[in-house]
Length: 309
Image (cartoon, rainbow, N blue to C red; front, side, top):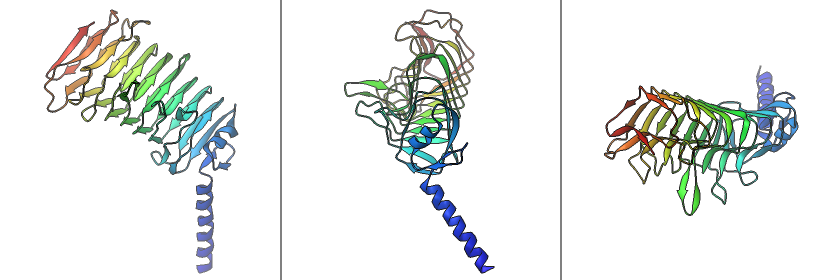
């Protein structure tokens, strides 16, 4: 019996050591890799899943093509920490489709102050159960009007900044995509810029918490910067009492109306000022002039429902 236990302990030790030595596994082939980039390259222009073992890794990767899912073996325990590829992000995505599940992105910084967990340059993106924290940006994208972005059950904290002669960065900065869908996610402790900035043609932003009570210098909590159709519903907002903020929860087309917001529905949301905040704020400021459907929102003291610019 003792011999059997010793043998079992030996094999368990070998298995754990092997997993630690090759933390990035191609789920289709079963092969492990020491490098995240090598695991991505093993899929190439094909389709596959990379499973990331628990641990903290100073690694990054560029997806050049294909359809790749990046999945934490245990959600919340696979951490990409501070390593940037192409002076952009931990994951630079240029394929047809990418899926991120359960991964933590933290401490991302670049010389131009644009360091992100994810830089999406083309293709569809789905993010679930991910954490973005203590970085210059969470997710930043270029334009791809043929593709969609979905973010669900994820958290964004300690992100964004403004000042030092540099453009503002944001928790999420979405370019000209076909659609943006954000659900059941949390935004908090912003360091400047917007929590959600989007130039997507259509948005669905439902069932999220945007808590700026510990934020500083937040511009807008939701900024549809050139207009958008869709729906913003059942979100809970708390406005910061700190810093030089714009005192606006939701902004439509502050950068100029280049696409329609006709019929955009903003309803069933709840908004309040943080404890100790006695300054007036505006729930929705609209530069578009389109017919926005605003109503059924529960607004706390000191919040003006609507302002037209």
